[in-house]
Length: 296
Image (tube, rainbow, N blue to C red; front, top):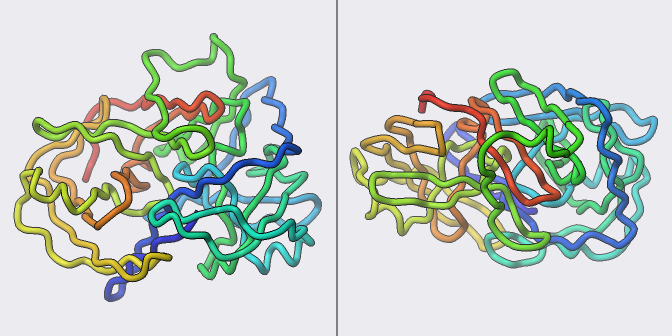
């Protein structure tokens, strides 16, 4: 799970790229709740935060990130919590395939927003971002359905059963095994693009640079900033779509789109905070419940 940081003048954009990581055999899934449980989300245009509490320690803010299948905690927090160093981290940069610096650890007895999560491994590294000290996602509730209601700023955790499944067909996650992530289809005029649903990304839509010549844009893409990752420094470009993009039943008119080399198509928090999505991480599928048109 590596950060890609887009640096612009007076603007910082962070996009979380998934980390592939196999879970240890001793990982213990938290039992699915008998009744729905609600977790408050603290949403801004750029971040989706929840409060993490490990044992009796004070709660701390972490990102709720649908674009990850592992957990990440800041090295300072790991030291304060006394988390074990279980060896080199197996996590890799999902964009470059290079190892993520840091070490492996294990978290037990943790809760997000007061709801118990499974005991599981975590990557410990120098997180180095203000106002947050880690990253957790729907993978924390593998036996449950996780509904993220962006407009109401809340997560609802439900027991997975035939009676609680959303209506309609689900969209399978992209990828396989431990690297699979929730996705949806971006429908442009005559072009369908599978994209990751990623609340850790604070840009509406990111596409590989090769798509800039396949879409109708209002002007040629201009330089927006730079992505910094294990791969080095990469330019980011931006342009506004001259038309509408649809994400299942949701339409977005004339959205700004970022373009960069490498990586995968990505739908970020500015879109996801305006809609409702149900994640079945254990079943590697998701449903978008919202319909209609939202602001770009």
